[in-house]
Every structure is written in structure tokens, then in C-alpha cells.
Image 1 (cartoon, helix red, strand yellow):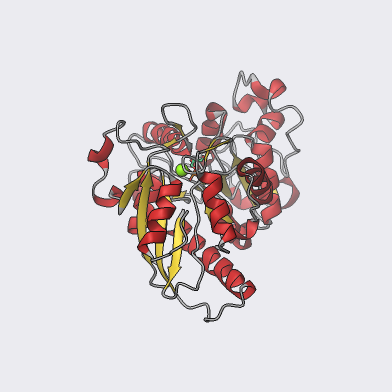
Image 2 (cartoon, protein in one colour; image 1 turned 90 degrees about the vertical axis):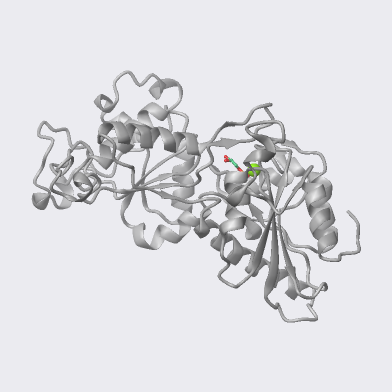
Length: 390
Ligand code: G3P
Ligand code: MG
């Protein structure tokens, strides 16, 4: 929950909550969450929801959240891990991208709704070329009915190196221009095989192997140096809070597996990738812009006595020191807004686990630690001199 407070108390308090571990444990509201969100609505305080979750289109996730929290929410103030991928559509709209996640076919539908035109999933590739990953038992039970024909046939070898200059038009084989992980994959084996194949390929032609790989005369020994597709992750969360008494692996664990295999394959080279989501500055800047827009809408509706004015202070309430607290502590606002971080005990971090209070130093040190989101909002309200009590 981040509170956007302005210099004049007549302006509404603006908030956006991390969802998992602050408002919900998977689908169960955390005590106080609904009352807190209701309070903000009754006081005409606009919401911005900012989450590292993903895997469903914003409209679908917001409708689901409204039901679970029993509070009406809208997409105009909802940012999830892959929402900022929309800013890459212009550059890639007519290219071919690979997407994956917990349900890659759903990720395809989201990517297409964002504006990407040619979207391929690992299962599409398996359906067209089963030799890519032998013994894929999931093709029948899990992937049946989710695959689409590929825009181009997969290169079937046998030479790993092709003369890409001769490729054009219809007979050109499948070329992937970018790869996106929308949320936490389930079939790590297939996804890591396909992602790594493409990172080793000539310019994204699946089934080829770049002759530059491992060439010590080249920068980075030639690895990822032959026009291979960029790899985008939508969040870096090693853990997330599900209501099980111990945190569960998130997309950051999958990313560590991809990077670990890459380190083995390249004899110690680091994987070059782009990571979105909290704590990345891109995501905080994107969310701040969404918040600014939403605040202006609300002020207009309220017939604001003051102009929109500048956001002065932000209170970021979250449950994960690595994403919510570090992100707020490190973000340097594009509009000079100050960010404060508030850590709740209902999520990934609790005082009696994983180092407890001792880990809360440096970039992970919150402005304050509170029991839950309700106390976090109370603390921000009091700090800003709000009279109404939650
Ligand atoms: O997969 C969701 C998880 O990584 C964290 O989500 O809402 O706590 O930022 P959230
Ligand atoms: Mg969280």
C-alpha cells in the first residue's frame, strides 16, 4: 500500500497495495484488508494496486480481486508485474515473441491483448517438433487444446549453423525476436530447454547454434552476441507469501534456475536479461505515472479546490523486503516525490523467520514495521495529520 499524500490535506490520500501477503493469501483476504480498502473508498481515496503477480489480463485479475476482497476495484489503478510489457509493443508488434508462465496459452492471450501480433508458446514448438524435448509427458494432459500452429516451420537441422543471409520470405524457418516470462512457469524443464536453445541460436532461429558461442576472441566470449532474442522476466521474487506457513518459490526462483543452467552451459558466464516488477525503478516509475493519472481523475471528480499539485510523499506498505521495501527505498521519483517504506508482518517477512529484524538493514530497512495493512494505513494517516480514524 503506498500513500500518495499531497501538501494540502484536502487532496485525497492515494494508495496502492502489494497484494500477496498484504491483502490476500492466494484467495483468502488477510484480516483488516477489506475494511482498510473500504475506508479509503468511503473517504474518496483512490486506489492504485501494484503487484508482482501476473498471468491473467488486468481486467480479469481486477474482477477476481474485487470479488475476493468484496471491494469494487478498476483497471485504471492496477499495475501488475507484466503491465509495463505494454511499453514494448511498438518496438516488437510485428515481430515474433515467445511467452511462457503458469499457463502459457493465457499469457499468449494477454500478449495479444497488449498488441503483440505473433505470439508462440513452448508447447506450440513441442507440438510442431516433439524431438525438441523428448519424453514431454504433459503434451496430452496439460497442453492438449492450448497449442497453435507456428507462424514458420522449425528449422530441423542437421547443420547447426545456417547461412542466415540466404533466408527470406516464406521458406525462412521460425525466428523468435524476444522472450517474455509473464508469471511463474510450471514446466521449468521444457521452458529452460527452449529459452536456452534460443539464447544459443543464430539470431533467434530455433534449431541453430551460433558459431560465435564460446569464441574467446569476442566480447563475453561470444555468448548472447549473435542477435539472440532478449529475455524479459516480469518479476524477481525468489519467494512469495501464499498463506502456507513458509514462503513459496516465485518467478525469481525460475530465473535463478535459467541463470544457473546458463552459467553451466557457458562455463561461468552471467545471463543477460531484463527484469521488470518491484523493486525495478522502471516498475516504480510506471506505477507512479499510473498513480498520478488516477489521482487527477479523482480530484477532478471531487471538483478539487486545489489544482492537482505535486505528489509530496509516498508510503509503500509491503510484505517483501527485497521487492516492496528495497524498491521504495531506492526509487528516485521522476517528479521529486519522497518515498517511505512500511513493512507488514503478514507476508514473506516475519520477525521470527529468515533472520527476522537482523535482515532489515541498508536497502531493506523499512521506515517502520507494522502488524498488518490496517496498521500501516493508520500509521500513514496519523503521520499526515488525518483525523478520520480507521
Ligand atoms: O507472484 C506474486 C508474488 O511474486 C508477489 O506478489 O502482490 O506480493 O507483489 P505481490
Ligand atoms: Mg506481497
